[in-house]
Length: 314
Ligand SMILES: Nc1nc2c(ncn2[C@@H]2O[C@H](COP(=O)(O)OP(=O)(O)O)[C@@H](O)[C@H]2O)c(=O)[nH]1
Ligand SMILES: [Mg+2]
Image (cartoon, rainbow, N blue to C red):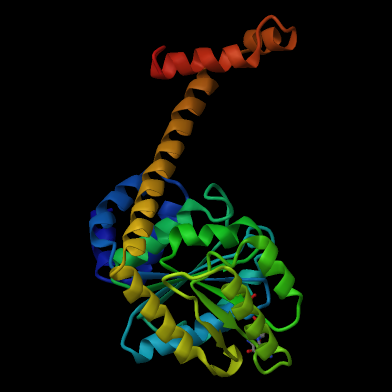
């Protein structure tokens, strides 16, 4: 294990992949790995790329990687797709779209399904990003399918959130109701080769006006991801946003919030593990019969169990 961690921290892609798999599988080694890598993390810029399925996120990520590489940066990608455990199809698609970097040792691409807590985004996503960070990636791109909660959850992980929109598609109505306007730091209107991109960009700006004055006014860019057009400008905005966070109170607040949530998430996981173990030891035919026959109620059962685990004072 020590050797594996050392090799990963030195940037060996296969060792990094192994570490992420171990952490993802929730093995008893996961905590050991996270403890070992944690002191080396905290340097990378985490950029969330979110938006509706088909908006062009993976295509865009591919071009963002290219741009970052031109700047001499090393890049890690975590692509999260909730449909993957069942179909695998979407993830294959993501892979294909980022294939131009498949053989590049400086670019690490990882796809994973989303399950577990943190809303739609699994904690493993965040841990994978931390591992990539510790293993020397300058930038970690996190692609999430913008369905429901995961779209909003990305803000808990990423320093900078880019929301990818496309002309038409009724996105204009969608974004307003999803409360997504507030979480985006940069707007990307992709597929600008299609009609309506200017209108879309204007609408976003109007909505940003309605949100009122903010220290960071999210810029709106038009891109044609397939051709790489406009991508350099968007990437420059990501880095402007990072600089903004580094020198403002908002940046510090975001960081602290994330750290708080990290501890809370670990606490939740550990506590439920302990409680579940105790419940599995406690439950019996007698007890379940008692519940069925209403000789005892589930609140009392749960309360007794908690008393047993944490003591009656808790
Ligand atoms: N016309 C056009 N199509 C694009 C553009 N960017 C991506 N696409 C296409 O849109 C489809 C979905 O792209 P993908 O990157 O998989 O979207 P994702 O689901 O958001 O990751 C693919 O067929 C892409 O080739 C663009 O700028 N213009
Ligand atoms: Mg994709």
